Image (cartoon, rainbow, N blue to C red; front, side, top):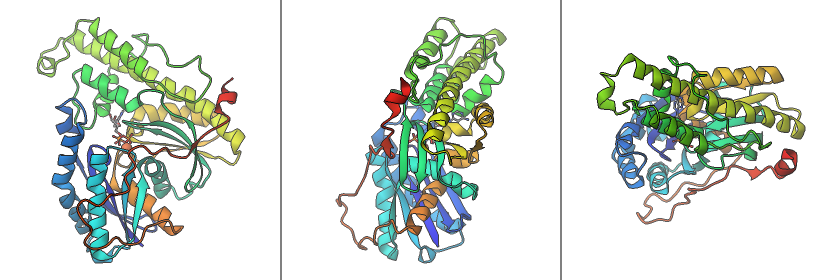
Length: 372
Ligand code: ATP
Ligand code: FE
């Protein structure tokens, strides 16, 4: 079994070829984060154009780097949601063209399920059921994965995701937005004193597993504004060591509280999850923010106390990639969940099955009474 995976749900155009046994034959990512960040975020139309420009080349590279031709593929997996429909469309159209031309079955993949399941590619001992914390640019989810395709949502964000808070904070601090703001912020935070600015930890009074990052974002913006430091990129090269220190302190203090919020919620989610299913042995942490070393080490701490095992995919598999899509395709294919090959000449205006908003599993119905 050899599956091509295609991912275009947000600002990365990615493709990969993976074998049924989990062997990664190739992985190609073309990121538009840099381009899009110059316009202050992901503008759907611009992102769509950026995907369209590179999709053919990214897929071709993935197949070539695997030393294969399309004829050797067994199926094509593609992200069909959640995400921006204009962007999803580019990937789905490409996937269906390849599948149609080479008569291959096609598997529609949930982007967040892929973030979670990729952990099973690199850790063959990771069995269902497990708990997953998915932290990225658009999502903040605590998911109990009971079985393939059977997910219970213990918590989600009521406003922003943690990655969005990292990105805005990085932007306000004048940092490089090359791979989203996260990596640059993580680096600056290493120089700072994490106890210097007193930000309030979100939602301490809510005894549930939901998240909120909008309030922390506002606190950070006010802290930066009140300190009268230069934060535009052009003046940073000549900034005083005092100003650099102030920026680093804000970055470190933001990161501490952003992650404390994750710790709070994970501790409670582990309690809830073990009550629902005592067989749980692992906490999977994935999504772009899970590539952060500070996040990993803090969560490692929490998980150790509970006797569970922390499973974090390597950073290149935490941020958006084609491997996770191919792998999720493989898992679903093996249980018979796939669509037959599309016709070779599908019309341009064909109504694709795109799912821009697509919850992963049902909400935990007992959540409200647990929270009391
Ligand atoms: P979603 O998965 O919710 O649809 P997305 O696909 O855009 O969103 P990912 O690629 O999974 O997101 O993650 C991107 C996010 O991860 C960005 O917000 C980015 O700043 C953040 N990120 C990446 N590396 C780090 C890091 N080292 N520290 C903190 N955040 C990081
Ligand atoms: Fe993602």
